[in-house]
Length: 115
Length: 118
Image (cartoon, rainbow over all chains, first blue to last red; front, side, top):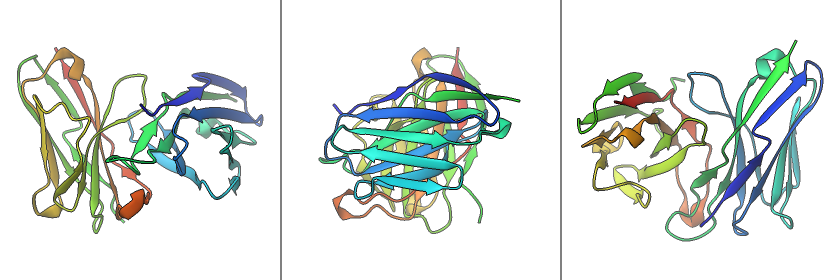
């Protein structure tokens, strides 16, 4: 079945450094790739998303890149701050069948930003 | 704009007991999702509603899980009887619509209900 792999599982950076989280997906028909941030005791919150007709999208300190040929997409956070510390999830949409459009999530990356 | 509301926030039960979770989506959102999030993993979709109809329940363990969305607004998810492996966070999410061809709109998540089965 469809699968999304996410790496690394944990990431520790110094404040001000950049952080990169990478995901690969198996469904070549996937066309929507959101990233969610989940803080302790809260539900996931969308931080950025990208669709398959775009290769890169940026929103202030956050950017996402998509390589459809290689079935890779990545989250880039620049100038990290302690409040960026959380678990980040990537997801990819299912491209066909009865579940088309629904999301498959990666296992998450725990980002720690040290002051 | 009020977010997705869920209750209770925490629940502890013994195995073989039953439990129910409630979700109130964002006003006007036609699509509602229930996810199961086991510790250390990403959310896994259990069931998707469009208004009060089921769109996708392919991953719902129907022998013990049931869900309904009366009048296309609030929804309840029930587990009966619960097993130890049901210990997880149950997340509700909603979006404005789910279009034909699998058009995907932003999903907004609630805070979740943390279930512990002893």
